Structures are given as structure tokens and as C-alpha cells.
Length: 105
Image 1 (cartoon, rainbow, N blue to C red):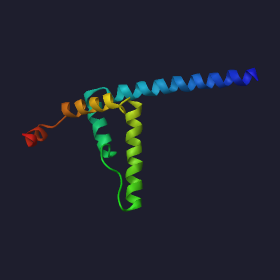
Image 2: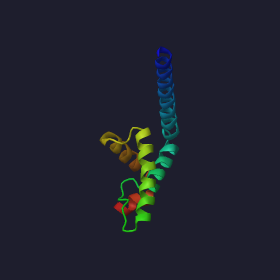
Image 3: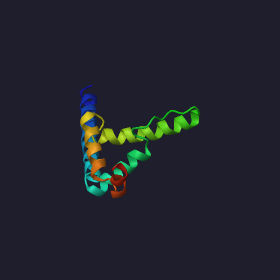
Image 4: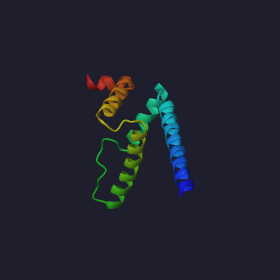
């Protein structure tokens, strides 16, 4: 019984280390200006901030699947709460194209 508990704890520790390593990889990947632009593009393609529902169930299911991936990425980067959303907004503003700024004027 003790061997089982020790193995279980060892497995949990290994999973926690892998999770921390992967979270660090996400931060490293999306921490550069180029990575932030890619992140914003991915989240846009995933439909973050848009309603995934449609009268056509197949379309709604497809959009919900894409949205799930975007939410997963946000969670990995710690962007799912209010502070994270504010961070994403600042990122989007910093990476706007000049023609987008002209349209708002």
C-alpha cells in the first residue's frame, strides 16, 4: 500500500513539473512582440469574444470547438480572468496596425 501511495505522489509531482514546464513554454512563446501578434491572431481565429452559436447545429459545434481551443490557450497563459482580459486588450492596442488607428479617428 505504501508503494502505491509513493508511486502516486511521484506521478503527481512529475505531472506538476510538466505542467509548470509547459506553462513556461507558453509564456516564452507568446512573451515576445511577435508571439503576442501570433497569440492575438490565434485568439481571433478561435472566436474569442464572439458568440459561437448559430441556428445550424454543425456550425455552432464547429465554432464551439474553436472557442474551446482559444479558452485553453488563454488559461495556459493565465489570461482568463479580468486582469488577463485587460492584458489582452493592452496587447491588442499595442499591436494595432496604423490603418486601424486611422479608421477610429
